[in-house]
Amino acid sequence: MRSAYRKRRVHLPPGIQNFKPGGIPRKLLKKIIITVDEFEAFRLADYKGLSHLEAAQKMDISRPTFTRLIEKVRHKVSQALVDGMELQVEGGNVEFTHALYRCLDCGEMQINLHDVVIGDCPECGSKNIEDMAGNWLELNNRNRNKKRGKKHE
Image (cartoon, rainbow, N blue to C red; front, side):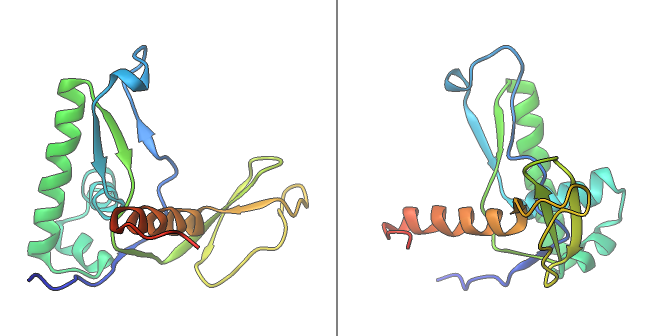
C-alpha cells in the first residue's frame, strides 16, 4: 500500500477552473483533469521559467517528484490542445501559501498571506468578499468525500 504523500505547497489558487476549445459545447467535449499541484508545477516551470530544482523547492517536494509531476501535466495539456479536449483544474493534496480574495461587487482581487483575512474590499468597501483559496480547498474536500461515498457536512 502506497503511503499518502504530504501536501504540496502552492502559491495561490488558480484563477480559473477550466479551459475549453471555442465554439464547441462542453457537453460534447471529453475532459482531462489537472490537479492544482500539477497546475502549479506547470506555472512554475513553463510560465515562470524556473528550473526543476527551484520549482521543487517552492512546492516543498523533491526534484524527481517535481519532474514526474511536470511531465504528467505537460502530457495532459498537449493532449487537450491536440485532441480538442476541455482542461479542468481540480483536486490535489495542497496547501496555499497565500490567499486570494475577490470582491463580488466590484471584482477587485487581493492577495494576502494565507493567515491574513480581509474584512472588506479596499477598493469599494464592500463586505461581499469571496475567499478563493478556501473555495478551492472546500471543493476539493467535497469531491474527495463524494468519491469515498461520504456526505459533505
